[in-house]
Length: 285
Image (cartoon, rainbow, N blue to C red; front, side, top):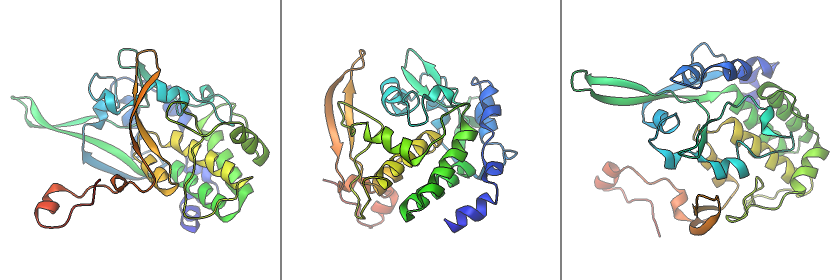
């Protein structure tokens, strides 16, 4: 928490993304993604270039649709689901949707192509990620405040983020947060909601602390969508996750797999070349 405060400075707003300006940019081509990962954006603390095709999967293309945020997930848990701040229509999220793919995504990750042979039109796809940024750092600090019992400080950080990422969103209080999440049923794979059951090794006070942590993780999930951080929240709070089959009417017709709290698949598998060199692979059932 101390390092987050040092990174954010006395006025955290100065280190948060200018979401309003980003929202006005075109979601087509690479306009929004390049602005999101620009070195001129003061919210970006660390950028990383990697070899990746995610800029295609998270763009207006037909490739990679299985990896995007589907319409059902968006409506029940992310881009279209309400929170204690009200509707997400107040957010500066220009969610690009494609009716053919029924997917929703924010243009955060650019698709950059390095040609190894221009004549043959072959090469390597690249992407740039905002690995560390002010908005995510503020969410980390809000979580730390909530865990340490500094509840009002956590609410203050949440409201600072909301004021930057939205227009007219309802300001939060401990009372409004508790009222919202206490009025929501816990997520199940067939009846999904924004409220996840925690299975932690540490105690969480149920009346104030749990709703506040639900709120922090909910907003963090929206702010960091497509940035590869959600699985860490899932593991840290022992959330169970599922694989589902959903039909064209947006009905869950089957739950085909689940990942319980102690499932060994939660540990990322070692690279194949490391396993081939003799290091035992992480176990799998």
